Length: 159
Length: 166
Image (cartoon, rainbow over all chains, first blue to last red):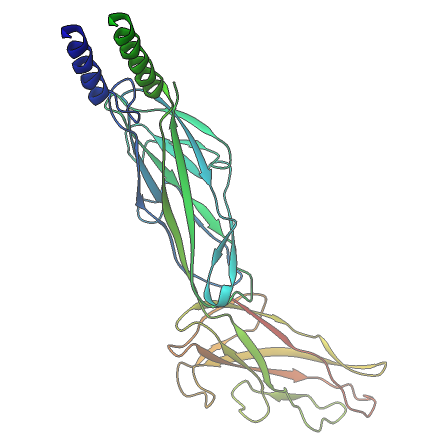
């Protein structure tokens, strides 16, 4: 009976310490959308590129997770933005339109292609940021109005 | 009985261990937003008209001539900078006959009366301008024809083209 009780307590403690979503360092993985990509005013027929180093208009997502762990980043990138009456405006992501920053500083990034999976390492305190740029390609007859699209980043902690 | 309890405990620990070893995955989204401005629309509102021209007598139409200068009306995004580019013929044609046209001049203004925001310019491949606060602009083109002394009688025409881009 004593052994059973001890094991039950041990199991309970381990269960509390190691819930399924925790990693080896005990930190849960969280991903947060900090800032959207903002084009502002776009003129028909005039492409507009937002750089990943643009502190005001680039997109930013923050990652928190196990200290120093490797993470795999993948993106769902929209091909178009949707506007009034279903009008669409093409988007294009370049081969260096994403930037990975272990220090979470926009001035210290490693560029990568958001169309391809990317592996990075979280910092000693389990953090990193991803910055995104993209180009809008309005046609000469692009319908006026507000356009939006959603960019999703999935992060997986690698074993 | 003791063994079975231990086995159960080990099994539970093993399950927990497997869960902890599973890869963690999470995601988040951001939006991309843009506001597309009004597309540009250009209308050829009035032809450049020289009227009667006599052989050997040059004739000019000034860009300030509201009746005879050619006029384009532009509509687009309020206060937006634009670039005007012109394709200007070197001759007017009447069948196989031609008559030289040159000395092009331009005026642009915020209104069709040519009284607000008036700017004179020389039409060319690239002229910078800004649409009015109402998103409009009016552009006039003048020129000169130089008929030869033996210019064949007839109605001579050519196309003047203006392209406007943001």
